Length: 239
Image: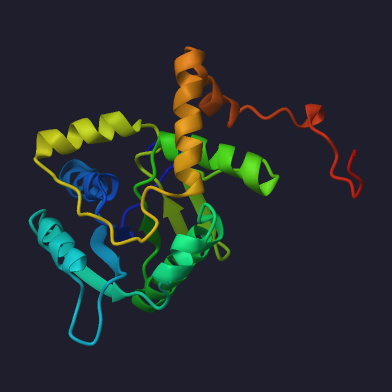
């Protein structure tokens, strides 16, 4: 929070709450930190509803709402504009393109809502494992060296994305969730455990087992880039 100056006095913050333990812990963290912080900021939790229909919000959205409201936070359900077709999702190899499209659609909706409400910040529950695995995913599947960052300013500084859990590992967030008595809300995603990101997670875990300290070194490397030892981008490729 301090390293990246994530919040300032008077900020209006949307907390993206999917229902996973990461986002639920994030909602609790920002609500709890506000009680003792030397600054004041507004918080509203938002859930993009992937299940809702003409008869109202989906069951997962309602369950997330009950959990968030128990933390004393205002809660808003945002009906998804785009949803993956279950048949297409099952047929897709690895689901990488569908996951990208779904995430981009949800994020676009959050950006639009933030603009409509005059919010300055959107908070996401991504953690250190997510940051490393995004780097590995981009490296192996997209051909670039990049990842999520703890703070990202967009639209000439009019909107800031923050990831306050960036220094925490998944197991640490799970431990916090257990202490708080939190249970994640099951995702309605038709791909769930069958994605390219899940494959990368398994590879990363194997790497950590084989090379002690690998996770810490990879995370440190993302802030220690030696540009002079990287290749120039060219049009040609070696056969």
